[in-house]
Length: 327
Image (cartoon, rainbow, N blue to C red; front, side, top):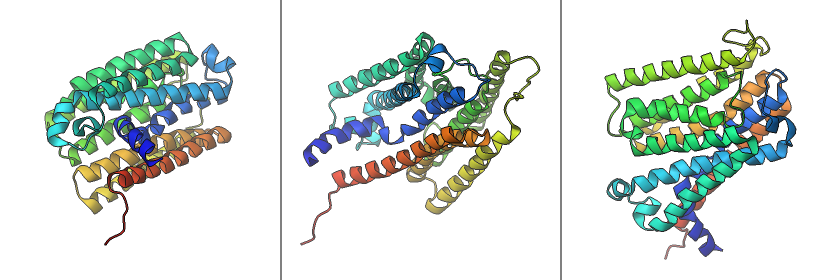
C-alpha cells in the first residue's frame, strides 16, 4: 500500500490538489446561487439538469483547470526549479517529463469534459481560461503589474463557467480582489523576484480598477433597469458575512506573518489558508441571502477541503521523512 501511495505522491504534489477545493467552492457557489435565486436566470442546463450532476461537473471542471495550471507552472519552470526548488516533483526526478506532460493534457481534458455539463458557452470559456493560464505561467507571473491582474481575472472567469450570464457579480468581484491581494502579499513576503515596485503596484491597482468597472458594468447590463450597482432583489445584509470574513482573513494573515516573519514559509501559509476563505465567502453570501441549505453545502466542502489539505500535508511529510525508531 505504501508503495502505491508513494507512486501517486509526485502527481498530487504537481497538481496541488490539496487546495483545489477553493476553485470547486467558487464554481459550486454560482451553481447553488443560481438554482436558489429566482431572479437569477441560468442556462437551460442549470435549470433542467439534476443538482448532483451539476455539482459533479463543476467539481471536475474546477479541479481539472486548477490542476492544469499548477502542473503547467512546474512544467514550464523545470530549469528554474532545479536551481531554486530542487524538491519539486519534476526538478527532483520523481516524475518524468513525459508523465508531467500527460498530467497537463489529462487535467485539461477533465476540465473541458466537466464544463460540457453546462453547455457550449461554458466549454469555450474553459478553453479561453486555459489559454489565459498558459499566458500567465509563460510570461505574466514574471511581470507583477500584469500577472496579478491576470490572475484575478482567471479566478473571476472560472467562477462564471457554470453561468456566464450571472447578474449578481459582487461575489465574483470579491473573489477576484481576494485572489489578487493574496497573490500580491505572498509575492511580497516571499521576497520573489522581480519585486513589486511602486510603479508595478500602481499599474496593478489600475488594472484591478478597470476590471472592477467592466465586471460591474456587465452585471448591470444583465439586470432590469433601475437595479443599479446592487440589485433590489438581494438584501444589503447579504454582504455582511463576506465582509466580516474578509476582515478576519486580513487579521489572520497579519498575525501569521508577524509570528513567523516574512519568507517563503509565511507566504505558503497565507496562500494555502487564503484559498480556504474563497469557499467561506461563498457560504457567507448564501447565509446572508437566506439560502441556508445551499450555504451548508459549501460549509461542508470547506471542512472537507481543510481536512483533506491537512491529511495530505501530513502524508507528504511521512513519505519524505518516515517515522522510525531510534537506535
